[in-house]
Length: 283
Image (tube, rainbow, N blue to C red; front, side, top):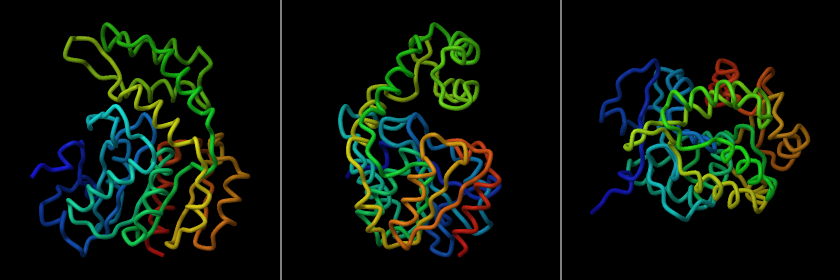
């Protein structure tokens, strides 16, 4: 019987980079975290947070479908598809319950997973994403990704573009240099000697289209587990108004706004994000 997990690039992590044994992976005494990255991201975006957890914690990170080194099917990029992937993975590794943390697109996928499989989710953390529909959101990502002349002849050429030319093009929401660096981190060498995206560009467009075409207020209002919404104070993705609506929509939801952070809260303010996460996990 083939393994579903084999289609994904994944990693278990312990605090301070401690090696993870087979016994650790199945140890029910360890507090378990699952982290879902955002659009254009990959599992190791969570490395600093996952290795900063407490002594008796273990984290599972992976590249979601279409991203990183995981499989890249031509279809199946709705939040429900991502949620079903996670459920099959959790069945395979034998984790019956865990704390689920999702950023941006990963937050929408985490919300869908918690809605479909509530018994699995001890606590839910949604980082800087709301449940409202935004069918026009894909236009921004098409303009953003199509602006890059991929494939690049070399990785050095890609670096020159993203660190020097891209910030001047006016695409960034927030810090243009930071976005350029983030996009460059998604460029990898290809077998033909060139440099291209580590993700499937078409999968990114489908993920935004299918993820934002409908709102998910009903799923949010029906959540039964303790839920934390984290917003970056400077974020243009999760507005203060939507954030406040989320908090009042369900008595199980609480929220924290982290100062001096934009949409990538856990990257902009990792220490504050980690403290907020651990305070919530302990409560």
